Length: 376
Image (cartoon, rainbow, N blue to C red; front, side):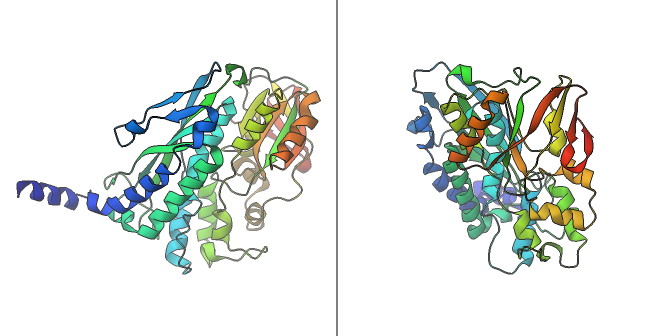
């Protein structure tokens, strides 16, 4: 009886494991289907370690290798999914791509070091136990995590789903929204494939891979502007989609792009995700280089165009959103054509954007006649 009373009091304090269980089971089921994904990279999970307080895995290949690991959070994107779930009236949870977004925040960072993802662990932390009870939303989120692992070649062997009543509180009108984050471990094999950016040099070409849209940066600005509209996220865009649907297009994975370049032994001087800082982030290296962008994508994603139409300044857009390029590859000039050809065969639209030059550390964005300072 005492044990039951203790459990009941803990549940009343905000942590009720019986309510969290549906989500845990959905995630366990999705995770089990991913276990063999990293095998093609020579990484194998020890089955006996599953369900313990961690996971054991090993590299079976013969190459000298490094491990790379990073942790990233999704930010506010799933707040839009929650808003749409409450207000769109379609029956959809709008979580079909949220797991992809969460996992790719870390996976697209790991590949910047030349590492290929093999292990992913997640954390879905909600402000109350009740959030986890929605079985349809749990299935949609778990399935989207599975899809992310499938496209990246990584396993999801473990995760965490705490109820944090005293830490997490959603901004109204959304009733409850979890904080999502994850850790990705990647392998660099052989070690010579490690990319540090030290080879970056004047004369290098800047090759851009197109984005799928918003990805997961600049979300707070989109939320602020959307809530000022009469229909908020239900506002119809010129392309026929509504604002909320356009904002929730999943992040694109660039894992296969980097993997394809490595398989062709293309000389890579630097890799960079088109994330926080927008186009200004190109000037990330502390070396005094000028990054001259002379060409851009033919079509700016509709959501970004709409932000301009409702009054967001051009420079703010360029330094907040990816503006149509989600990933950058810096290669010697003689490798530019081969890089673009290899990327296209792997399914990516690549653009030769410009070149690296000696000079002041900044980005010259010639398509709009702007000079953008480096983001420190």
